Amino acid sequence: MSSPDQNILAISSIVCGGITLVLALCCWPLGLVTGIAALVTGFLGLRKADELGGRGKGLAIAGMAMGGIGVLVAVIFGLLIGVSILGGSSSSLN
Image (cartoon, rainbow, N blue to C red; front, side, top):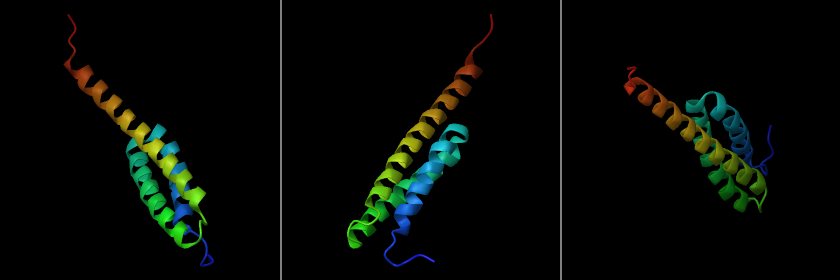
């Protein structure tokens, strides 16, 4: 059980952020989803930290940072894969 003064949203943000960094490199669509979850829960965790006197603020910020980096990596990987698929199908051998 969690005590009422714990910031569960900040904790879930850092967990999602850590998972995002792994998934963005190996399975980018899932990394994108978990990254967005880390950003949303981090933002909500920051708001909750204000209510709790700053408790969990660092966790929320770290989760948002990892989530943002993971989303950026996932988007770049998705674009690279899309460009390689589209670029590879239009080339011809002469």
